[in-house]
Length: 458
Image 1: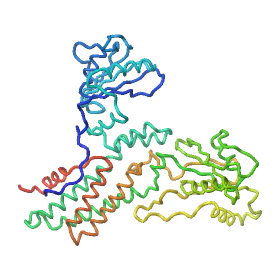
Image 2 (image 1 turned 90 degrees about the vertical axis):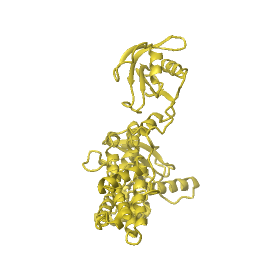
Image 3 (image 1 turned 120 degrees about the vertical axis):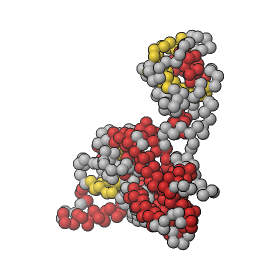
């Protein structure tokens, strides 16, 4: 099986762990308490120097009140808590220390300068603590992304989805698929290498066919989610569209409960896209008011109309506002009128992608509003982090790799009867695509499965 390797994930310890890094881990600005984190082999030296420890290190993960001093001048900088996290039982997997100090700018600046004066310590780069945690095997890439989403979560639903992903639920789903693919690949390669010696039964490949087919179905089902998790992560794009003076800006102001857009009886007041972020029932919504859709000789208004139509094309939901005085007096004629009106406002919708069942961007939802104020607006097609079942797909990066994985499994099925070695490359590519999502995949694991399942060389 020599030469048959797949792309490896990052190996623990691949970072330059000879360096010790430090940074302010809490938010910048005045606050009651600030947390300064140190990670690396010189963390214990930094803790001893800054906290005046002359004997043994403090008990792991227990706070100790100490005077924080400048090791150069022994001047007292602050009095605060210190914590010691010996590796590998730490966030980064390395020896780590924390200083919980008062959060004034002068205090934090003095402590950071004092740490920078110690040999072997340097300021951390953006995201470097989390990067070290990944390389130490503490987090996979999906958990790293979940941590980032949790930090930036602005609504309750976003928080719940981020916590669910940070807990490793999404990563475990992808790891389960990867484990099944490894088994498929191991059985295929064992059949190729050992079937002539009658060490492998003929029915092995038929069994692999069933596994591949089942896995492909699960992947395709995961992709056919109408981007619900991605919408929840980034916010539902809702665009208010319609003719001039239909009440679009008034509707925007009513929904966000502030004068976000200028309201005027003059037609064509709004010429650019006016955006405001809303939290509706814990779900994020980015609401956009647009220029009235009409033909105009004014080049500035023409650009505004162009931007309005472009924004409608990108939207998850178009909130079409109609002047109620334009409705036909006969209620039976209203559906035909509204149908014609929508065709004049919304561009044609793209056909779904045959591979994933998803459209390039817009969800295609339409909500008519003919009276102000509107009844309760709710975000459509948004992921529900409390729903039972597998977690939602949250990143465009995940979607791209999963789509490649499906295409690779289709390659296996297409080439299976013609050239099993080339078909095996399809499974190998599928496994590599999954590995790029979590950042973990290794060729040695394939060999482990071969010897475990088939006892080759017994």
